[in-house]
Length: 408
Image 1 (cartoon, helix red, strand yellow):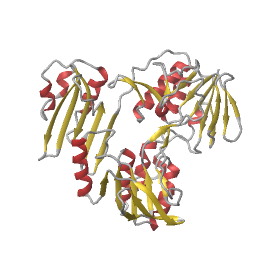
Image 2: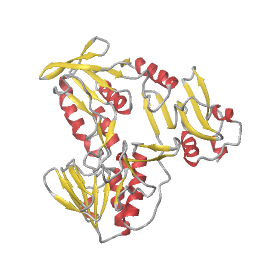
Image 3: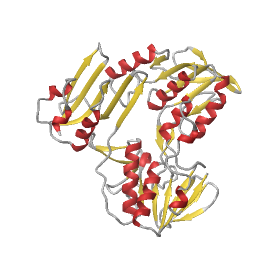
Image 4: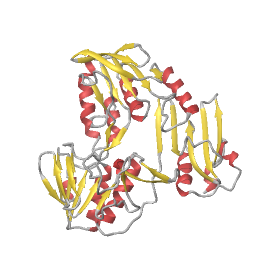
């Protein structure tokens, strides 16, 4: 059996380990567009911040490929998939055959449409190379602009502020973390950011950049200009599946997969940020591009590819982030439609900067937002995933003193 895995991130790594666990002798080929061994992508912001070095990023030992008898094809990107003939073509014209295929290509940064975006010192923050390039220009940078109020934007802004730069964070929506949190949490987050010297502009975006080779000015959508000698684009990501034949493999935003992580073509699987499947809280197909889901999906895909049946119950969005002295945890459906199917209970303690919001569908918890005092948030996430009925008065769950272990 010849297994091919496109992508050597966490989904691909866990798939390879699962395959080798079940099939000690099958041939495994892993293809990656970077030249590095597997590393933890979410930690690159810590490298930009300066709190860790590049040597802390790897998630497996240097002998990972050799130990599992994996053929590593690094520095190549797949440009064509022939699902009928079971072949792949790489960017350097190599043809690779497979019996079973896993697409674990992750996601690519979402591009922007702004004049001058091709100037030097304008970066994405998705890979280790992106961060290395930013670190190289830091000694000559004073003013930075970060586009995007999501997790990548926050991490980049925090890291550059930590490095001593003047940082302006531009958020296209009404409040930060609009995809992960709600308006009240966004207000508390904004207050925290401003109190630590970060300039925050909401409902703002960049229309263009100026500079003589390298960027030195950003022109904003409100007509103002600000100086910047470094810019970071953190406007989200898009699943990386441009090589996938749409006439053979079903694709929505991500590649649609069944509960065993198989695509519409038997023998071809997808996992991680590129895959789309049922969201437990939303009850619809969704792409939840987070590391824990990628790990689980990769392992389940690898098990099924190598003959052991396993099923994925669905994905669940969840995020934990510390912004200076404020902790935020969210999970599930945090901004439900305004209809009778949902009940929302919330509580705000301004004195302690604490906020809690719980979203219910009937007697089941489907979403939550916590700002500070998030220690029991893991139990709430488990309740959302298990869809266990809540039998006590729901108002009690918003009390800061309530012990959620009583529900389990």
